[in-house]
Amino acid sequence: MKASHLIHSTAVVLAACVLGCSTPSLVQGRYSYDRTTDFSEVKSFVFPEVEEGVFSTPESAAHFRTTLLRALSAKGLTENPEDPDFIILVPPVETYVEEYVWAGANIQLPMAMLRVSFRPPTESKNIYEAAAHVYGEVDWPQEDKNAAIEEAVKTILANFPPGT
Image (cartoon, rainbow, N blue to C red):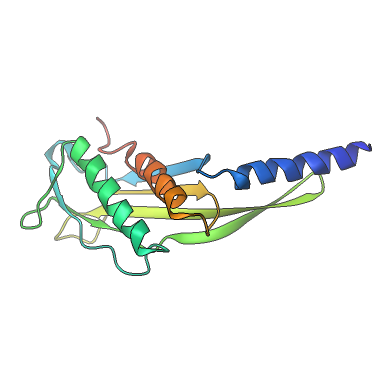
């Protein structure tokens, strides 16, 4: 077997392994925050209903909401629609395909990006924003989408609140 054929075959197998996993194995994240915010004073939030179309299914939207609420509660924050310290904003999940050429093989990796922003109720600037990029299939079964959402929420809140 020629070396170039072996490398091409290895690239195809690697891509198949990454894409063929039934649960997300690769989650990357990023975050930023307002350094002037005293996060020790941030105790409550309001989380409006996730708008239709933000997630691919209503089940995903509901699972995201439950997972995020549970994670914020575990960090000592409470939902308080009457007097929140911040509002949670969730733009639509973006799906795209990253393409790579490795050893002459074209590799396409489907991705989804979930973003959240925390914003004071009376201001238009974010005090915290984060995103999680998940490698995976758009047409996963719902249980796999739920697992991806759980990993994405862990990644998004890994550094929240900042400085603690």
